[in-house]
Length: 281
Image (tube, helix red, strand yellow):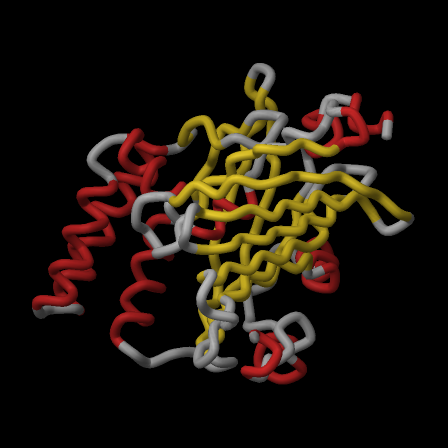
């Protein structure tokens, strides 16, 4: 596959895509939209802007305090600009000062609207994460989304494009310390794209499987699927990333239009078909 020999940033720069994100376990299905734009190059790396939008729980806008508060805080912090290497590593936060200032301004209003021990603890945790750029970057790396979306292609130049004894760090417990999985990364391709597969184990604990489908032309993610389960439990947590092609076209055609909840999120559910428990076992 000689196409990989071209610098990735020369193709990915200028792309702007929307993705449906899903986290599915036996009882809950979380969905939201991720807006991803590779806006410019900075040296040999590129500036990637991410924005989270429209949080759903089991196909509906949640009214639970924890979900509502999380979305309010998310809207205050995002968009975030990352400096990302051509091989998928998050290097730094380009707009950290802007993010922190935006959060501090929003926090004043949030403290008036949301009171109580839970809200106070939630705000304190975000303040702790935003102490400096380093603590903020580490907190984001402990988010399963970033562990899946930004990944290293270590099998790129290996013989037969297979690499053994690969370490993949992943947050088994959200926003807690990363767990290391040792396994094999393999690259294959067909007419639809390039597939990067990883399967690894955490010693005596769990199994992680991740598959990315990458666009051959611009190297953006077309879709990704990850699953984690404990060795003594067949029930898995499923993570899915799906490029929303239709939404991308709407964005280009109506860039100034007021944002509305896409019909596919609340009615047709095209990008997050409901999974029954038996599908997760």
